Amino acid sequence: MAMVLKVRKNRSAPPPEPCALTECMAVIAGAWAPNVIWHLRAGPRRFSELRTDIPPVSAKVLSQRLKELEAKGVLSRTIQPTSPPSVEYALTPLGQGLVPALEAIVTVGHQLKAARMAPARDQSLPRLAGSV
Amino acid sequence: MAMVLKVRKNRSAPPPEPCALTECMAVIAGAWAPNVIWHLRAGPRRFSELRTDIPPVSAKVLSQRLKELEAKGVLSRTIQPTSPPSVEYALTPLGQGLVPALEAIVTVGHQLKAARMAPARDQSLPRLAGSV
DNA sequence: CTGTATCCTCTTGGATACTG
DNA sequence: CAGTATCCAAGAGGATACAG
Image 1 (cartoon, rainbow over the protein chains, first blue to last red):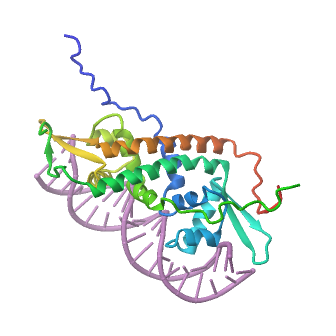
Image 2: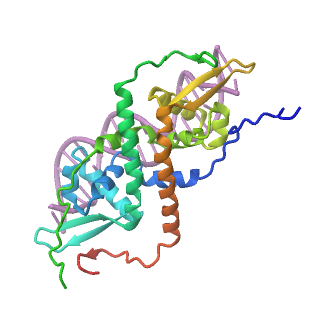
Image 3: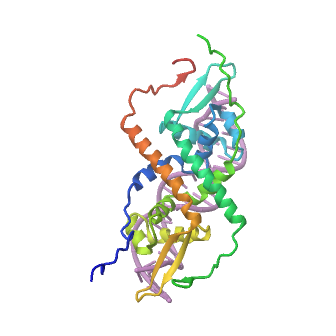
């Protein structure tokens, strides 16, 4: 009688890289950090531009996020010596590495929206195993 | 010394899909939701298994997240009619769509870790535009 | 085993006013 | 324009005890 043990193929699923997951999630966590990175992906933006890009964000929070993202090495802050002083924020190479991940997230976002449009044919009662 | 003017090509950067971004971020936001999905990617897991997969999560929060993720259509909850009743959680097709995004995030996580190891050669003083 | 209930703390984020 | 300071509200999450 071989195979008694069952394979339970993935029952002991390996936690391959949950650490790296958390590492990145810490950067894109929160309501605004992902939006900031997203709006910087095409090129540098100024503080006030970001504010109009993402209207509902408050100045305080935007300032906080930008400071944190800079500290994490994701974006750079450059002071433009113009008459009314302006400041440009841009993704660093490290920050640009986040763009593909955000694009993947956006892709899933579309799937989620589509799924909400067609929530159809899906029993929503407690299911017993085996009931189809 | 050409290239003084630069094009400022993307000064009016388009906000293509910030909405989809937020849509997906709402699903993978928080400290535990991404980990739950990650540990389900290889196959169904039971409540207690997820607890040991992700030790620091409390029962209350794990329960809350599972309920929310189920409500969002990302995972399914199936009661196994075994002697000590057990419950299996599994990704729905919609939830499986999140896996590539999480993989992209994990990839960036590695880059971030590597970058922290070698934070070297990087001036950290306020920079004026033009100073290299 | 699979949760729920209560209580508590910390962080995120908004509103408003103010500074350089 | 580019923030900072202060105050406040809401939610996430932890600990513990308890329930089906």
